[in-house]
Image (cartoon, rainbow, N blue to C red):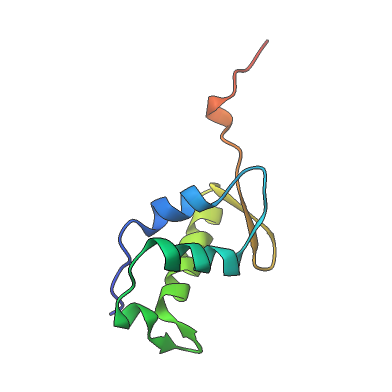
Length: 89
């Protein structure tokens, strides 16, 4: 079983922005810079390092939950936080 990357969801939420699209490759680079990855997480499985599979899975879950938008293949953006906006009648 693949070892989880602690706080991955929170870090991806920080990396995503409402006002700017971010490429999947940039997300990978940010995670590599912010989290010390162990040998198992860097190990290649199915043609990609294990940590990249975890990142894609987390992004898919964020999109499904409505926290992120998949703009196009490999490009993501944070969903605007509607709860912080004031609604005028």
